[in-house]
Image 1 (tube, helix red, strand yellow):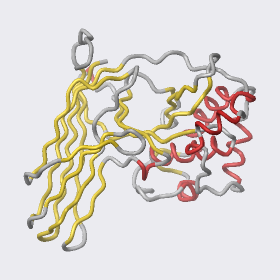
Image 2 (cartoon, rainbow, N blue to C red):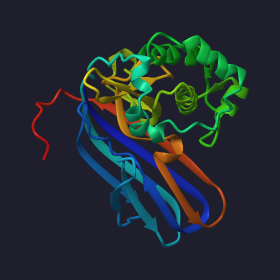
Image 3 (cartoon, rainbow, N blue to C red):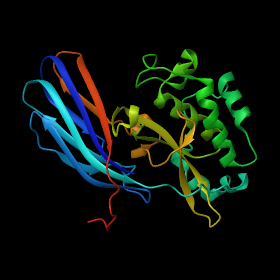
Length: 289
C-alpha cells in the first residue's frame, strides 16, 4: 500500500507561554516491509528543528519555542509504502527459553507494572496458553478485545493496566499494555509499537481521518535461529499488515509517545489532534536515496 499521511496537532494555551520544548515522533520507520518515501515537519510559530534517533531507533524531531505565544501547531506530512510481512515463525517453547533469547529480548522481558496475581490476568494466561509461543500469542490477541471493551474517555495516556482492569474498557494503548504484560510474564519478549492504522472509508473513500494507533511486536525465533519481531494488534485481533504504518517501538508507551513536551506559563492547554490517511497509486519501487 502507498499512503499519504497528514498529522496535525494544535495547542491553545490559557495565556502566553514560553520555553515550550517538544519532542515529536511521527516519521514512519524503515524496515523490510515499510519504507517512508517523504517527510516534512512544520511548526507554527517558526522554530529551528533538530533531528536525532532515540535509544530504540525511532526518529525524533525536537524544537523549542522561547518567545511568548498562545498557540502551537505541529504539522507532519509524510508518505509511506507498506508491503505484506512473511508468515511468522512458529518455534517451540524451548526456543524462547534459551540464554540467547533472553539476552536479545532482555529489555522487552522486563515485568510490566501489572500485578501478576490479578484474577483477570491469571485467566488471560490460562486461556491463551497453547502448544507453541505463536499459537499462544495469537490466542491472547484474540482474547483481549473480548475481555475488554474498546471505549474512549475511560482511560488516559498515564493509565495503568490496573486502570483498564477496573474500568473493563480502554483504548489501543491499554490493550497493547495488557497484552505485553501477560506475554512477558509467560517468557515471550514483547515491545510496544506506535503508529497509524488505515481503515477504509465509507463508500470506498480513499481519504479517511484516523487516530494514532498502538499495537505490539512479539519476538519469535525462526528455524535458522534468527529472532523475528512479529506484529500483533490486540485492538482488532489481527496480525499487523499493510494497513499498519509503524513509527517506532519501546518497552511501553512512555518510550515512544507521538508528542511530548513542557512549557512555562499558565496551567492547562486545549489540544486537538487529527490524522488523515489517503491511499495513492502503487509506486514503482526504486532503491532508497
